[in-house]
Length: 160
Ligand SMILES: [Zn+2]
Image (cartoon, rainbow, N blue to C red):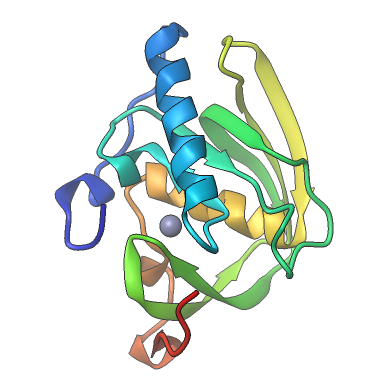
């Protein structure tokens, strides 16, 4: 799903039932993520769904320093943020733009796995940035909502 699309600005709904509907959705999203060149994460509203769920895997990205491999997080919430860093960012749903976005350098994320079991993840660097990007999606925000002024937006010069 690409801008402009109303689903991208909607707030996702918390998942209460951990059944095969949510597992199937996660499976589909993981497939799309791995099949899309350069894609390191995907939020459910990017595929037209309202569930609060994202999938992420930054392990093969060149900016990655540390990572947790494949992350599948239901009802994610960032509970602690530390530091600040501005970096260029892009998004599958906003194919023609990149932007300089200031985000926390490290964070603590809580949520559930697909079985409904609580999880807590400490993340930093590029993975932490990607997590903030996906949690933003689920809150109805795109990275272009986070850049301070049009001078920080750039038309994409390179497509993967
Ligand atoms: Zn995105």
